[in-house]
Image (cartoon, rainbow, N blue to C red; front, top):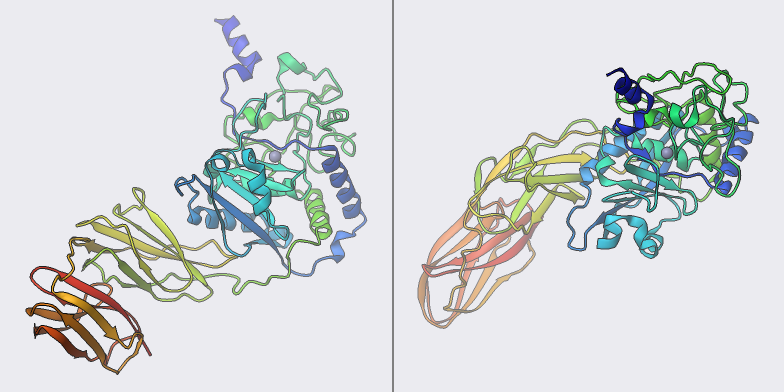
Length: 506
Ligand SMILES: [Zn+2]
């Protein structure tokens, strides 16, 4: 029993579950950039650059399969943006979505974006940070343990992230942006081989780190616990204590719980809640002052980023009120028109609907630039639907959804055209509210029916019984008291319905 226990303690990698990891590998060039930024920060060069908040553009590339399925939800991207802006706000850095999302439908790129480098390159936005979100971020032939959640590729200067890491609770993108701004892991040099006393000894037996951190150069020195070689070892920063990748096998409590000693025999005391460590589930993460100095210096050196943006509002408070469909109302036809009240500061909204009241079954999300959207479905027939709306802008993602509303779909497509009608015209279209709509019908066989004007949510506004005669028929529909919007004019008989849409303007 004792032997087994020792074995288990001695070789934690054989049984512990690895946390997710980052696939970033620093190149020689990247290290040079890190060191140059460090020198600039120490000389105070970056401080002159900025005055107030700097808004850093991010181009999010949302990759789906070819048929458009399995794309990350836009609402999750906004939640990730909210997390990022909280993570960087004390550095005066805020991120915003650069000119909308880039939607990519490609099976190869969806599974692993860099399998389609040509496509990634063709969609890259030079003036923004590029983040490609696909199904996974596993780099090929990576021998080190753990699932890759994301990485920054210093050669292409872009970030690849697994879609499950894009949400309001994950620190992954904040970590990757740290790399984008030239930060190394606090455990630089230990990525490929986290400390294990059976492999590296205890005290650690080598003074050089195990992984070829400089791609074509020598490994960095092992950083000592007393900080005596902090300028030249590990991540080259002195306010991030030595770490030998203890976080990868951490049990998710954000507490260093090994008894590792550095090559000098001193006990380790890593900084668990540093954004650039691997410790998981910390209540919050921070960057150190020196890390922030590098970020500022790197940002100052990136003159091509479009940082002139000022958001339309710093925050969005409040949520929309849902106007229509009116709660619980039947909605005819296969098109549903949605409308809600505007919210200050929002220039776009996420409209979400589902037959599940928790929006977790067939939830559809649509970004709407405004407060009205007519959706062509497909909607299921004879179902209760739930819907809600979330206000947003390019910069502010920390918003809530409205209260949810409901509507019922009726027999959506059980509509036959009226056989007796040769031609059906409604004019003028658009019509100014207050003017009559003229309905012209050319009929091949006389019939009895109705002329009906409805709003898109199915309410009947005007209805008149008519005996249509063979030949030309004209009827007028008043439009007084109609608010601007889209309406439907229908000819209804016992055998079918013919419908035209008309636009009523002010
Ligand atoms: Zn990393």
